[in-house]
Image (spheres, rainbow, N blue to C red):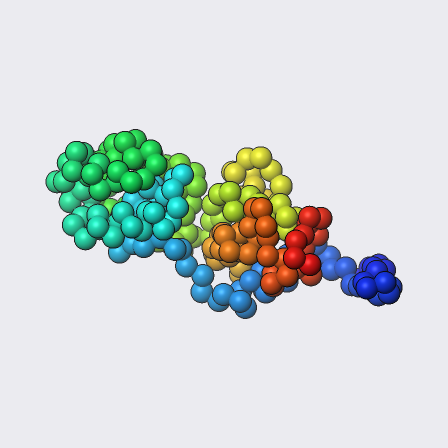
Length: 229
């Protein structure tokens, strides 16, 4: 392993540089140890309500979505129940969310398509999921990961930021960044990597003021603009 000299408190100290492969494995080992069973912070009761919650989360906070779905899912937990509500009644439940008009239409349309083409069940294949109104690459990836245990790494703003700061991957394309992450993250960590990166970005590696001092992977991070250190 290569060595380099760094100055800490005015003294020279030998520091070990890990290979990039070993460094990435160590990052996820640390995140795994810190949170062995990471979970989404969206509330849901079944695969359909998970799908709806993820669709509603676009440009909305999980907290805001959970407030809405607590009421919505108490009266509707299946595509047919959503259709029975009708668009106007559903819109009243979603009114506090951003883009609620388009989200209302999409939830109605995807519910109709699930009833018409999938016997009311949420499909477990990406192409089928992405054929549903309001469901794109990221939403499909989240559902495939959480509901069906597939090793997807949907890329949102938190994943973008953390992946770049930790030098895991760098691309302007969510699809390309996911491809790079899946190549570089060891297979045993891939299923939970999405959650670890999101939660790390949400609570530690924040956009404006990252909490570097309390970061479990600080020593493995080469981000030049660290704070609180």
